[in-house]
Amino acid sequence: MNRQAQAAVLFLLGGALLHAGATDLYLRYVKAGLRPFLLASGAVLIAAAVATAWYERRRAGRPRPGHAHPEPRVSWLLLLPLLALILIAPPALGSYSALRTGTALQKPYAYGPLPAGDPVPLSVVDYASRAAYGHGRSLHGRPVRVTGFLALDRAGRPYLVRMALNCCAADAQPVKIALTGELPPVLRPDAWLEVTGTYSPRLTRDPVNNGPVPYLRVTATRPVPAPRDPYDETWNT
Image (cartoon, rainbow, N blue to C red; front, side, top):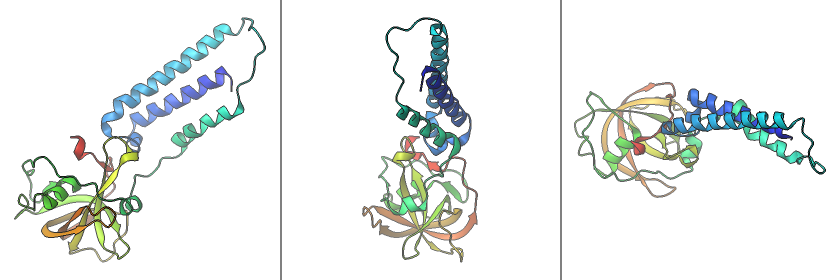
């Protein structure tokens, strides 16, 4: 791999980062707030590629001292992550990861007022924290609407899940709500559902890390497409 080839790889990698940042593809890898940094990184790589190509072009006619040694062929392996980024769009983490990782639910410092609406639109993290740590005091008498994907444990018990992240998909962890009540006759893992229901005082423990998993008493369900951003960034707001 000579300098021209290195410049080409840098240019393609920078272009791939710009493409990911300009579309929703980047949401499969990092949280939404990192988009400007991703775009800036792509621009820097393209600038470095252009500078390298320009420098090599200026040197092309000059004699080079000593005996030139070719770069090792193993350096072509640098193309593998580039090809993976261009050709493979990984799916968001789903039920397989959720059932093998303990719930990441954390006790909040405080609870804000419930959003307006009837039913009240809540994230999985918001409902779970109010139910598990707030003992449902802010939820009594209010129907709620929560959206997430389904996960079924080995016994077939259903959970509504969102993967919460702090930075990127590599640190995503599940927050789970156990479902009871009026459920669809057929439950398909990884299917996205909009669930309407009411607070249930029941609480179970995650078998992976013994973390709290509150219940939601379901009154209605509706299948929905996967959201634009499949990860929950409630902790970053």
